[in-house]
Image 1 (cartoon, helix red, strand yellow):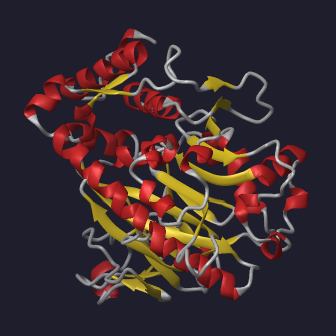
Image 2 (spheres, helix red, strand yellow):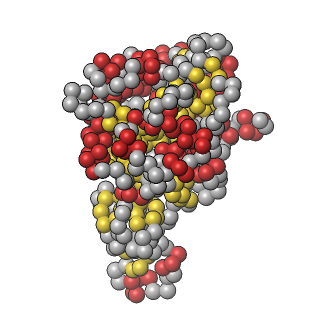
Image 3 (cartoon, rainbow, N blue to C red):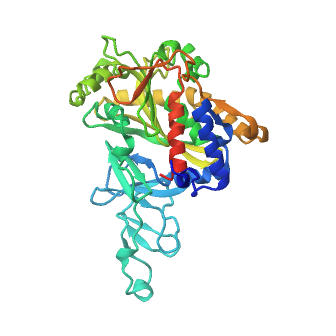
Length: 453
C-alpha cells in the first residue's frame, strides 16, 4: 500500500487514526476497539465511503407489480422512489424536486402516473421526466425540460428480482461485487424458476445500536445461539439441537460477505432447508443448478448470511406454534439502515417461492413473524445485548481501554479448522466455532474505508 493510500487523506485525522489503529489490532491480535460502534465522525465517513459507493439493496420487484406502483426507500438518509413506470420498467429515482429539492413522496407507497412537488408544483412522470409546472409558458418558456427530470440512481441492477443500486457512477458491477457469494445466493433464488415474492408488507422498527453489529451477527455469529437463543430450542420453536446446529460451515466468499450453513453433506436425506416433500416437488429450478449446487442444497438445513455492507438474510425452518404446527421454512431478508452511530432502522421482508400453495405461504409468514418479526422471539433476544454494546461504546473508559475479542479460530483457539479440500467457492471452516467471518467482514470494511474504494 502506498504512503498516500495508507494515510487516507479523504478521512479526517481522527477517523483515519481510529481505523488505522483498528487495522493494526485486528491483524496482529484479532481485537477491535469498541468505539467503532458509536462514533459520530466515523458514522459520517461511512455514509460517504461505504453507503455512497457500495451496492445497496433497495427492494424486490414483487413489491411493485403493476405500472405506477411505487414505494419510498432509503440508502442511509438518501430518499429514493422505487417505481414501476407506465411501460412496466423498474426505475429508482432520487426523491427530490429539481427546482428546490423538496421531497415529492408524501406516502410510503402508492400508485401514480405522476409525482408533483408540493412547493411549486413541478410535475414529473413516473419515468422521472419533467412534464410541466404552473404558469410554465410565462415562467419557464425556453427551458429544456429534458434536462430537469428526476435524477435516477447512478447504477441499478436487478438480480433475480432483488434490486440493488449504487450511488457511484463507476465501480464494480453487482456480479463482480458479489464474487463467489453469488454461487450460494443463486441456490436460494433459483430453486423455483419463477423465483420468490414478498409476503405482506416489510416491517420497520428502530434498534438503538450500530449497523455493523447486525452485519457481523448475521455474517457468521452462530455462537450466540447456544446461550442467547437457548429458550427457542427449549420451547420447541427451533427443532435442531443447538450443539448439532453448530455442525456446519462458515464460508468466506470474499469482498466482505459472510455466509454460514448448518448442513450435512454426507446425509442420504434430502434436506433442502427442511421444506416438506410436497414443497420440494415445486422446485423445478433444481435441475438447472450445477451438480455441485444440487448436492449442496440437498444437505442444507439453515443458511444465514450478510451481503456487504448491510443486507442480511436467513433461510430457516421454525415452528410458529410448537404444540400445533410443524416447523415451517421461510426466508427473512433485511436491511440495517443506519440512522446514526447508535441507531438502526431495521427493514424486514419475508419471502416465499411464488408457486407454492397459498396455505404454506400463510404458514411461512406466520412462522417468520413469530420468530423474526419485530416482536418475535429471536428479534427481542438480539436487541438487548446489541443496544448495550452501543451504550458501552459511547463510554469514556470504554473508548480508551476496551478491545473486543474476535480471536475464536485464530492460532489454534477452538476446534474449528479450515476445510482443505472444500469443493465449493470460498474458504470454509468447520465446525462453526470461529469468528473468521467477522474478521474478514472488518478487513474488507477497513480496505474500503482506508483505500477510498
